[in-house]
Length: 194
Image 1 (cartoon, helix red, strand yellow):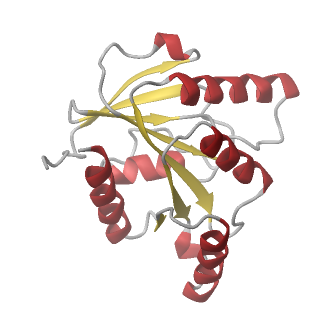
Image 2 (image 1 turned 30 degrees about the vertical axis):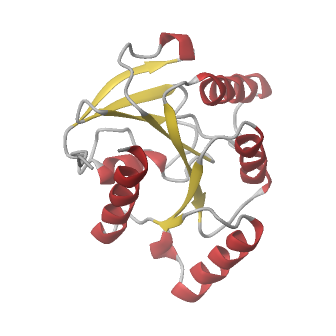
């Protein structure tokens, strides 16, 4: 197995339509989750850069499909967040259609990382995303974000509930405050992509 160097990362482009994707046929890992769940923070942490992906304290900032080149061997694709209430219904539908078109049509998609805020656990729209991924037979893992905000006992409760509902899926932990979480995610991505 050749190890992907996640320190070699560059933003390539943002697209509103999957058909405008980059020309390279690299394997793709998609980051999906509710608005403000920490997709951009996770991406910045795993590539060891502070500002490669734009991070905002207010939800709904990722409005396009964003492609990041990793080591000229992989695209990490940051998708718009779902569940953000302070946008119009038309904008929500546009984001939903954009996400679904990408997930349905990407022939290079190898893995979906479904990010879940550990303080909230799986909400209705997360479960809808899981149903959609299962229906279209897309491989996915869960990443519990913001684990530094909860006690280990409460994190274990959330994880056990998820394992009961969705056995046979990896559940990783993530916080920007610890390098060990970064290493665990990178190790799993290398195993699943290489």
